[in-house]
Image (cartoon, rainbow, N blue to C red; front, top):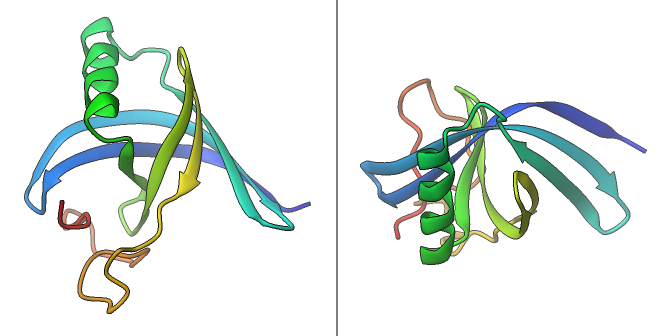
Length: 116
C-alpha cells in the first residue's frame, strides 16, 4: 500500500487574502481502494492559545487548506479530533471550473484558498 508521511500546515482562511490561523502538523497519508486516508497530529509545541484558536476555527468551519510545501496544497476537512490527533478528508472543489483554488500548484507566498 502506498503511503506518504511528512510535515504539513493546516491553514484556515477567512477569505482570499486573510489567513486567520496556521497550524503545523505531521501527516500520514495512505492510498486505499476508495481514495486515501489522512491522519494528522498537531505539532506538540502548539501553544495552549493556538490550540484554543484551532478549536474555535474548527467550530466555525472544519475546512482548512492543507499545505504540504510552498508549492502544493488542497482543501481538507477535519472530520475527527481527539486532542492533537486529527483525521482529514479531501474537501470537494465547489468551483470545478478551475477559477478558484483546487489542488493547484502555486508559487511560494501566494497560496489562495477557496472563496469562503
